[in-house]
Amino acid sequence: MPEDLVTVDATGLTCPMPLLKAKQALNGMTSGQCLRVLATDPGSVRDFEVFSAQSGHRLLKSSQEGGTYRYLLERK
Image: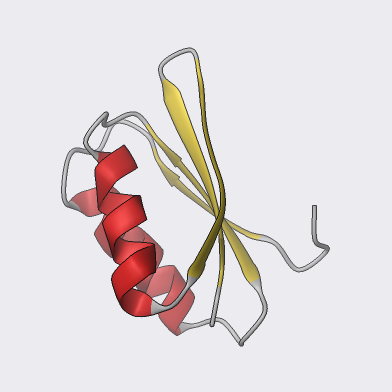
């Protein structure tokens, strides 16, 4: 994991809040910084795929462990 990793814990929040929290965090980050997002909303899987395709931020990893979805994005 990168040293300057920023984490957003959006567990317990429903759509569109995990994505909105991630967007807020990305706005305050510099190019190349990585953001880890933790979410419990199953709809977030598609949200983050579409968001990364449209925004240019790279979705480096998407996984699920138990009921928690984990995303790793790199700011463009």
